[in-house]
Length: 548
Image (cartoon, rainbow, N blue to C red; front, side, top):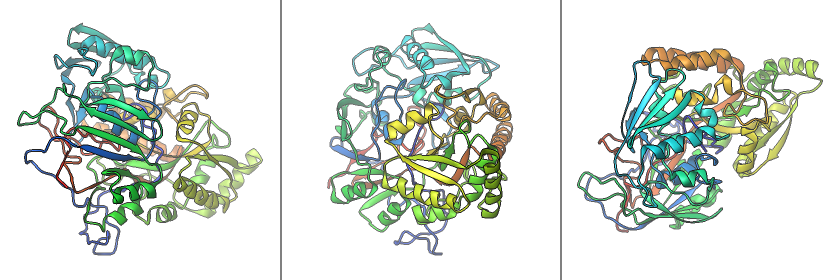
């Protein structure tokens, strides 16, 4: 799935919520009895790393391929692609952008033209040199793709000024444009491979080279002996010899594999699972990353009857007891959501998003039935038992106010295609954890609210011109106060339009054995500390293993 300004279609169902400042005890609860969301036992060291070894990483889901123009990368996919590909830019620990594979970037006075200067001599895994022509071909192809093309509506085109300089022409000011190059849009791949539409044999510049892939089971990558980055002491990255990414969709099975030593680390979206691991000193847990959280919600197709009726969407919001959902699904571990930003986010604004009220819900249900004759729709979700449990709970809550819901179970790849093409009514979803909100704007852009079956990144197909104006203001301003006000307008309009039934803030937790050093601690080429987890994923070039 795409990240940031691209296509991050994460459909995991549970996660870890935001910061808690209370002290913790060994039970995984705070001393005041509330649930702890703090990191535990993180192993970090500046000592000389031990090179070598194999790391086995347990992933939540399989990915349908590795071509950024055609395939969809969720958190699990991004974890793999971080190993194989570099991006042109990257985020630091404060969610500010820095050059990565790019050496520098600059803009004109109106932010409508950017120049990207590449580091000279960077080699792809097949030995080809990365040049400006490589980037132009990459970006032009992504712009033409029916999957990623929507993320390029503000881009006119790309040209190579010289061997290592790319010129980007925009059709409106975009102050944060370099941030988009830290996402799937900024992946640097072999242009011939990219244009072949091959998604099975990726060729990038990353710290690891693609090895072999048994789809649905595991994928291995091996150390890139010619990787361009070195640590502060001149030692070559990566430290590991190889990484095996093992797909284990069932949360309990994945946890059991970690406890049994079959894997070394894993993703978890389960609050209750994280709490269980908090009691075991043999593991380190990153459950409170520094960046933005994803939000868990039900996404509504506002172009599909009866959900094209605002009263129907309002009724669903009033009928949803998200506190009960969070308690049943996560043991209360996650912070409840009323919009795409948590209260701890610098972008957060309180809105009038409708809260649980069955009486109001029933009034609106009666209106919908009067206007449409009935109030029934299909709720789609993945095959995971956790998903099905949540669907059943929502079905019961909505039935209590007179809404008839049919449950539909689909494989993740099918569900994603249905959502992108608008072939759905409602679905469990998780999204909006871009380090900067201007990157999330593509999901809300009214220009992209086109009728199905045309592919669109505005998955809810919500067409609100006030949101479009606010997003343009946010992209075009270098003043933080102006940007925050504009993003506040977006939050107000989302609360009024109700294209999403918000439930809770959620992001992936990373759990590993204490043998793993610097699990999410890394530096960027200019020495800045990198953001520990970006949209559910993190690099592995800096990881090394202590002796057992």
